[in-house]
Amino acid sequence: MPHIDFKNDLPGIRSALAYSPETAAPLGVLAEILLRSDEGLTRAERELIATYVSYLNDCFYCHHSHGEIACIYLDGDREIIDQVRNDFSTADISEKLKGLLRIAGKVQQSGKAVTTDDVVHAKNSGATDKDIHDTVLIAAAFCMFNRYVDGLATTTPKDMSSYPLRAKQVAEKGYGNHIYTEKQPA
Amino acid sequence: MAYIQVPEGVPGIRSLVMFRPETGKHLYDLAQALLRGESPLTEAERELIAAYVSYRNDCMFCWSSHAAASRCLYGDEKNIVDEVLNDMHRSNVSDKMKALLNIAGKVQILGKEVTDEDIAEARKHGADDRTLHDTVLIAASFSMFNRYVDGLASFTPTDPVVYEEMGKRMAKGYVLPQQQ
Image (cartoon, rainbow over all chains, first blue to last red; front, side, top):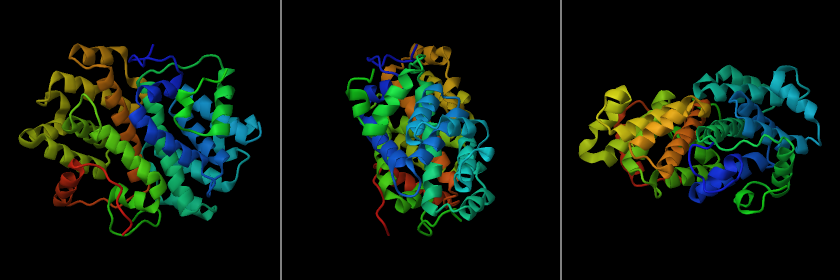
């Protein structure tokens, strides 16, 4: 049971966003820019970073929600998502993304855990300053989202078939207030 | 030196949001809504939660600046801020604030650390749903801000006077800094 009465039956972060629209507004736009910007990193790469950090933070709702969104951008290639979760260093992804996931994993522990060596390695693999910026901020933002979702014990849907439906909604319409104001996909 | 090309000499998050104002604007809007918007918690209390979480995350820029903002907002009671940072349990804050800071400290570790007992203890001392929501989201958002600031190795001033000035400015609210 959630720690507070959200006055709605929405799943995961949607219940918290609907409860507090004043904070939901900047959070929604932040997610939209960080996860759906086409500049530099691809949408699939951005969602993979979000999925990986949420997995490390053991946040079931975020981990599976963003895994399904990544899956859509990867044209259904679930294998890559499993590889990234299990051991990204041997995953079938670019050296650049490996370098960025290494940074994201450090950010998940603590900002201070990121070293010059991590950054130089990513830059040598083709990461630009903006790629590194966005990676650190995506990883940091999911350290927030994951804590928001689990810290208030929001409802985690057990029916795994509901995750691809919500993912499709986000892949088509993006992040923003509509994910809690519109009828939930079923 | 910061890991990416941010404006030189600009401290902490200010340099990062100048590098990427598109995201910076919404980060500042979030801080403004959470720390200055409507809430059952006072602005001083909310800044104290921010400072406490940042201190636990060992983010010197964030804890020093938010502690300064909180001292400014507490006015005559400003000693509370340093008491909490030194030892929250023995500080002179109310039992309700102690229970909320305990929850914030749990969120700092991980969302799942917050237990039904932690919530019940805060409710016993008068915390309502909105208070609990705001406490958790402030603690969660500083788990982000701290990682953003330190993860990119942004410039961290060490002179306390610099933070005192920053605190005075922050007490008035959060506005996106303009490109210099």
